[in-house]
Image (cartoon, rainbow, N blue to C red; front, side):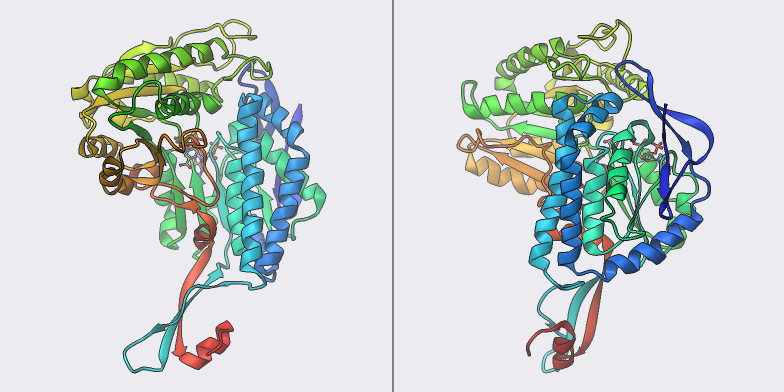
Amino acid sequence: MKQLHSFLQGSWKPGIGDDISLLDPTTEGAVAVCKKAASLADAVAWGRATGGPALRAMTFAERGALLGDMARIVSEHRDELLTLAANNGGNTRGDGKFDVDGGTAVLSAYAELAKELGDAPWLVEDEPALLFHGSKLRAQHVSLPRHGLAIHINAFNFPAWGMLGKIATAFLAGMPVLTKPATSTSLVAHRIVELLVESEVLPTGALQLLMGPAGDLLDHVGSQDVVAFTGSADTGAKIRTHAAVVAHGVRVNVEADSLNAVVLGPGVDQGTELFDLAVRDLVTEMTQKAGQKCTATRRVLVPSDKLEDFREAVMERLAAMADKTGDPRDKGNRMGPLATAGQLRDARDGVAKLSEHAAVLRGDPSRAEFSGVEAGKGYFLEPILLEASPERALDPDAAFHVMEVFGPVCTLLPYDGTPTTAAAIISLGHGSLVSTLYSDDRAWIAESIPNIAPHLGRLVVADEKSARASMSPGCVFPVANHGGPGRAGCGGELGGVAGLSLYMQRTALQGGASNLARIVGRKG
Ligand code: NAP
């Protein structure tokens, strides 16, 4: 059995205590084991003291070259990583690519951005501001890498993209990282770090990997550290309120649950490209990674007069997907299992709660036979579609507005087609990551955006003309903000250069105009 060690203080450490098994969610057999780490006090201090100075001594261009090297290494081992993603994550090849190629893409995107930022070691943000009328004094904002450690705690669903996206922004900003993947699916993350360590591209101390639980990690955080967390709202709340985090005012970014809702605008008829796109996007978002995506669509607002057509079109596509749910290593299958027994149990419980407020249109949560899998084995859940009444769609206590079911599960919500009702329903999710508006009606879109966008971190606007080229809302691009208000965690990651701000301290340099200009290298 493969033993997965942590990479701490520059060497592989086996850990202590009992073995923790990583399972294959298709067969339920163990694929590797790891152990919890001993105290992490020294690792946290070592990362700050060793990796920090090494990265800060590099320019943006040099850090970008490092990201480029990392992208190349991951990409060279793509097939091996896709196999591990199937074996430990239950990913079909397509799902594995979404994760692994997504990770390579974000490294490459930040490597490109570094070329624009050039040979500077830190950011000079904007023109200096006049302190008061008639004064020679100015305020010039600069952003410098923090002198602490970036602690990354990731969710189970994207062991490659989730880890590499956070590392790309922290490294480019100039901060060293200690990354902790979710234990259940950590095989891919472990192999990526192993490859990076073997390649010797990383400056000493720039990257550490913690396998197994967080242990005492957060007890050792300090005022210059950053904690970037992705996972459930419950764990996010524990991290925000951790005594050491509170005591030292540690900067925390939380990416948590999200009840994403997309909106079909009025007048989008069956037979149009836009209608087909809305159906296709929904099925993609429900079934990619078996619905285990923070950006997956959980609620769909459909004008009441289009409900019948929309429901039928979605049901037809989902039926085809249900037939192709099974062993992700079989190329004929399009959807694999959920990641763990716990996820399956939670998703089944969640469907039972949703069904108190919405009718199940299709899908049997207790189905036990799937393509290419021994009956009763594996953590499979077939796609489940529910539908609520128009009155229930407006009920703030309805389960579909309260509970994220992390699987291939979605609820259709009929509405009257107005932007105000759409916004009212979306807002019942109390802050989401993303939505798509499907509409050709410019006045409707113009009225919808100011009502809906404040509840979201990203809003896709899809129209008939761009329907063929449009991407489903769950495709996260490094140039676009990723994060959402309220329940989604109120965090923000990626988004081009804005993504660096999490790891940098924005300081206003205040002084004489010509002195400041000299300091930041401006003429004047
Ligand atoms: P989770 O149970 O909250 O775990 C997330 C991470 O936190 C794991 O690495 C976990 O480690 C760690 N953790 C658990 N308890 C901790 C503690 N007390 N202190 C420090 N770390 C702790 O979430 P999950 O089940 O992996 O992920 C599913 C959730 O993530 C869903 O709700 C989904 O919406 C959300 N998500 C959000 C985004 C986003 O960008 N907004 C992206 C992906 C997923 P162990 O695995 O070792 O327990």
